[in-house]
Image (tube, rainbow, N blue to C red; front, side, top):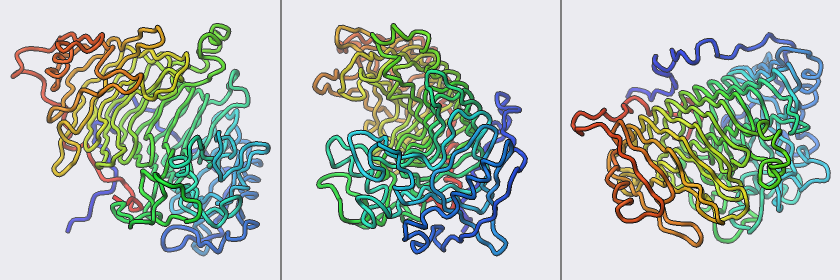
Length: 558
């Protein structure tokens, strides 16, 4: 039998993309080298005995931090020990300007499983739920940092499936069990640590610039993997994000009954889960660039329990009317702009998302050569722009070109009623182009034909009328007709509604459904048909025959 190809290689056309010439990151010179003193077990984890005592929860933190502090520039490189040691164990680390953390191939930096190590003073208890989620520092934080990053072909493992060792749920629940409580306890938010956070002390005067993630593998984060917030210049290149890894699950995510976190019914406070699926690792977004400009996300593979990429722009004190009128000079600081997402593959995720927070505006986004395989997961999502009147704002000048999707129920969504929350942050979405989009029917998939949904719903509430405008569908093809209509629910109108759609010049396979919606009186729903004729000479569907590839890691459960 020919072994499965997990190389993750890219076609020549992708590798030779002229837009990316000269932009691949360069690893800086080494400032200090640290050898590993711990060894992973056969599952690629750390034995519980190593840090069962919370006093030994982060044995490598002080020497890694000391090396970072001692370097004025360059990289702190984590390497294997002389006797084959290949693991580091640390709590929170702080990166400074000019310094990069380099995790060498074959080496894993593991995160402490003690919530006490991440605790932010006078905030909610880390490792518990509360009304807000402000209790934990990230494993790696860069504040007001310029020209820093995390690189190397090693692994950073957040140990989300590990039993925590301090706090209310010590020796009882895993990080992901704590996250699952938000599914079963009303109003609960998880206080779990992020893996990497880039931020600024003063969000109104951000100074963080040029942060790079390059070739690193991020896995098993207790919460979000990478959140650059208020950063001018972010590059994520050749990165793998995998949650949960095979160490915390079984092949095919076929976990035995009773071994996974409780995500419905009664909350679980007493049983540590032993097997995890992507949909039981809540809020483990892979890459969430917020309030950032000049972002490049290229050649990445992402499989995780929430958004693969989620572009967000949010500051409720500066960007929502009537407050925004007092802070007009600040709005450009928070507006997300010049984002390029080129040559990426998503697997188990909530898809390629813009939103839900868009109140500070998002503009000038290019998404090209994107593959999404939802693997028939109930939560799998394709391409979506999602927001609502509690966190809505302007989203404009977004282009998608070259998108292959299969086995995802929510295939294409532009929705200003993502939730029923209220407020004065009114969504305004316009000038969106979707070109060379192909939804591929797959044998034995439950998400083919009308089991696949397209949602097109602009905003008309609270005396505000903001339909979707200039939404262009050009060579947008489903192998079989999707479901277009979504029923109204409470104050949320039915879809399609409040939208101005332009079709063409390439084919739109569900054109008849769009035109029928107009004929049937969908509220403020307009369709301009600019497709080429005759149909038999129309452009062929975008070629997805080579698009879908296995996740390039033996640690994948797929």
